[in-house]
Structure formats: C-alpha cells, structure tokens
Image (tube, rainbow, N blue to C red; front, side, top):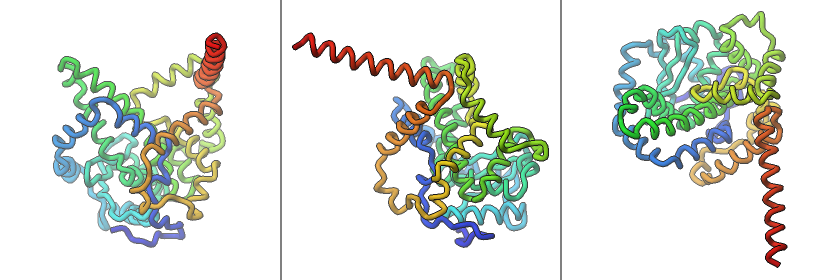
Length: 338
C-alpha cells in the first residue's frame, strides 16, 4: 500500500484517474485495436496461455527485487511516486543486469516493473523517479497486459509464419499493437511528469536517453528545436522515411517524446491538473468509451491542421480537396435532379 504523503512538497493528486494523463491518441489507438477482427480471440487465448507466476519467477530468479534493503533509494522513490499518483497498490520493481537503457511494465493481473541496470547507472534520483512514475502510469492505465501480449507475439512471429494465414493475421495485430505502444508512451511520460512535478527533470531523461548522458554538453532549447525539425520536415521523402523508421518501433524517438511533453505543459493541462482540475477514478465507470475515440479523432485533426510535416500537410490538403469536390458533385447532382 502506498504511503499517502509524498516527500518534499509534491502535490498529491488524490483520487486521480488515469484518464488525466492518457493521451487521446493512446486511447483512440486502443479503441481501434479492440475493433480489429480476431483481436479478442488472440487476447483470450493469450490470457489462458500466459502463466503470470512464471513471468514473476523469471525476474525473481534472475534480477534484484527492489526493497528497503536492496536499492533502497528506488524503493523510497516508488513509494513517493505512488503517493503522488494515489496508487492503491504498488507493483514489484526489479533491477535487471542489462546494458540497454530500458524500463518496462509487464504482467497481467499483477504487473511488475523491470528497470535495466544501465538506466539505474545513468540517471540520478529525480530522473529515476520520473521513470518509475512513467512505468506506474503504464500499470495504472492497464497497459501491461497489451505490452506483454506484444512481447509474446513478437517472440512467436517466426513460429506463426509457418502456419498458413497465421503470419498475416498476426502481423496486422502486431502492427496495431506497435502503433498503440508508441502512443501509450506519450501517456506514460505525462504520468512521469505528474509524479516528479518538474518538467526540467523529464527533459533531462529524454536528453540522456538520446545521448547516453553528457548533460554538460547538451542544451534543452536546442534539443526541443531538434524535435520540432524532425516533426515538421518539409520534404515528402523524409515524411515517408519517418513512417518506415517507426513502424517496427515500440517507442517514439526521444526528441519526439520531449517535444510532445513540452507541448502538453504549454497547453496548460499539466498546470490545471496540479491545481486539482482532473478526472477522478470514482467517475471511471460512467466514462463513455466512444468519447475516447472522439477525443482521438479531434487530436489527430488538430495535429494535421497545425503540422508543418510535408506528408501531414499533403493529407490535410487532400482531405480539403476531396471535401470541396464532394460538395461540388453533390450540388451538381442535386441541380440535375431538379
């Protein structure tokens, strides 16, 4: 059970719903994913096959479980993060000997958080608190089950390719899961920021992930400008290349994540949440699923209207041309009928 008083003056977000930090595109992608033919069947079969005890035992035997006596600073940070996000129950955290910069939340009914030793070595206490808040955000949003499904499907891709028709169906579901996974990272970054309540810390994490450290040689403004340049390329070839580069990635690039988080802060939503204006868990049962899809559609539409990316502009303008052509055609047919 989480301690209900966060350390060092962070604002506790009592009763906060995960809807407060979930990116509209994350919820919209999950709605689309659930509508895919065969997805429910795959998910049900997967639930029956996965032994959650086995998943936990793997890390219990091969990694170090965080506690008051093992990685005590991480243990205190997790309690603090849980207090800020008002989590009723905290996942177990394991530190795994791994040279890659990575952390993940996996499992079904009882998710666990796994942090690589390389990440623990690279980040300071505040930055690791952001990572733990990010991962706890995944757990509270129910992302772990879909992340675990994606991991298993990727592991089974070669085997399923031998089944007639199996590879194509699984590729469709895997691609949809990848798209959702990238959007879910934007949600979890927001949770991490709410947990630390320091945008500079969040920016430092993404800068370190991109550079491997070397903060004394980095500049936040330049890093964010780099993200803007990547997002708003004016060359159509670059836009297509970006689609190809990201289709097999479960995470967006660090510059993209930093830019998205900065935009969320600048929108005023982050400050409003700290001021107490956020959805409550007690209202989750009455939240309408279709609203998530509508919010996602509005989010994508707004992004297309504001984008300077060549492909995004082309799609937006094409939609406008098609709309104008449809209006003209409808009007012409109406006149001919009269």
